[in-house]
Length: 331
Image (tube, rainbow, N blue to C red; front, side, top):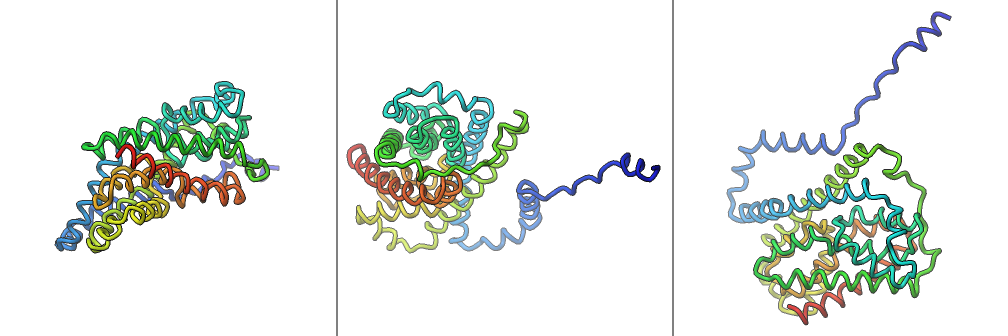
């Protein structure tokens, strides 16, 4: 009995702490500080200096908007009841779609958070067409993204209007298209735990930490890609792509899909691609928050493969056509 009692009273061994993304990031930063001398000598080449300048400038301009947007997105996800949307949206599905799209104007959030939120809205009874309109609109037309666009294009205020208008049109059009042609069996929502089971403080930090690390990683990749394009790709190649209106639009649309940059930061990358026309860069900004590699992957995980294989290509086509049309009129 005594041994059994001792076994019961013995405190459980503490679970080993896992090394997470924050610890890895801290270690990388410390390593960079320690080797800053050798790194400085390695970038004495003018091309490497140009690459570093572009890379750092994109990050410095974009990070404040990225962090602010992620924090506000976490606040909305944790402190605003998701059942609120089912009560707030119009009952008629055709009216709920533009209402959900307009909700994205006043609710900051990145595309990384909009996908699971849209899945939760569908679970709470919101018509899928309205949830999908919100999914596309929220990361593209919210105030944080539009403000970042204005800062990235200080000499072209019409870019803000063009981006907001084109993105909202695509979001509403795709919602109505799903209402017309979409089938319920194409959406297969998995049973996954969400933030509702946590305390609010823990849920807030969990959401903010995940989004900052996830979106920040894609931002670093995007900044590196933009710097590489400006340095490694011959100027005559970029000039050749940019000189053809159709090819330049398609090239930047494909680039937006491949780079997968967070919407709070993509305007600064687009602004660095100065060889291309404003219309082609507008298409880059419209496509990016709606169709990219990480979004296709997330949509497949949340809504199913049958959904993503239909919704992503249709959204890409709509974003290219609407972005090009709005750019031809406003830019």
